[in-house]
Image (cartoon, rainbow, N blue to C red; front, side, top):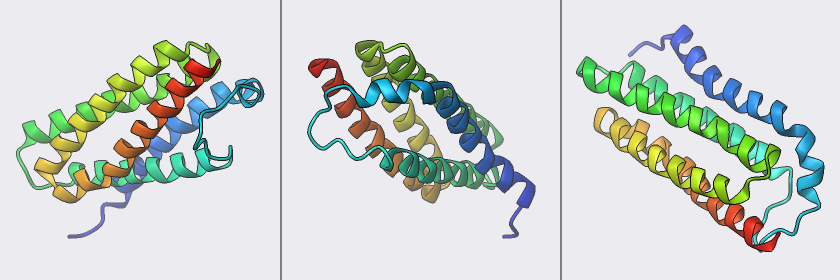
Length: 156
């Protein structure tokens, strides 16, 4: 199978752009956030952008695999819409958590995001198993983010 370079670059660039936009919109809140009490197992601040960059690249690659899958068009369209919806939900979480400091609302938003990621993962897996598996680290990180988010809520 030949690589469709334009599609691959678009699929990789979309989640990176979403993540970059969220980071730009929340970067001023990071100083305040650093002053909050953190739950145990909170990684150093530099870990977050590294992990998110890797996760966004994995998401983009997974979406590319689905985009180029040789399968029923309807199932593919549904999976890509689910992917887009979870990506937009992902974009809003840091705005709720960092910018608005609505920690409990952000936690419930993360529960919604977790369910949407799981739904996307399952749809991707049905079309291209490898694409679904590429979303497993994302689901794990959103779970860990839920722990950190709820910890911040409880401690502050």
